[in-house]
Amino acid sequence: MAIAEVTVVPLGTGDTSLSKYVAKCHEVLEESDLKYMLTPMGTIIEGDLDKILSVVAKMHEVPFGEGAERVSTQIKIDDRRDKKSSMEGKIKSVESKLNR
View 1 (cartoon, rainbow, N blue to C red):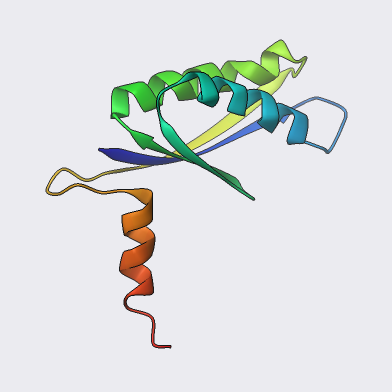
View 2: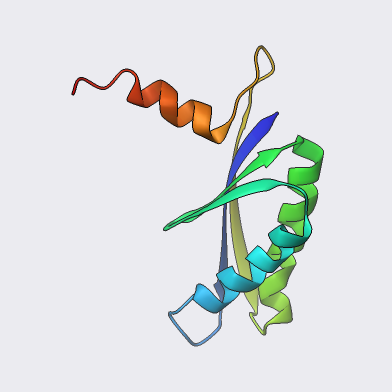
């Protein structure tokens, strides 16, 4: 199972606010069967890599449909195949090592 961090940034919109574009991109995610988590700086998606890439391609198109003239999309993929990985598991692994 893969975990991907995705950031879709519309350019040439004439506005510094991006939340309406993020909301539209999340509508695409809601239609998928992928698990995801919105963060302040991007979105984390968990699932089959082919499905993730397909959904990211659809998300990339959203700002164009909303009038953006240019879109920059960043994708960071963690595709671990030696054991099952999850968003929660990665967080718990770090938390278990914190000296509190």
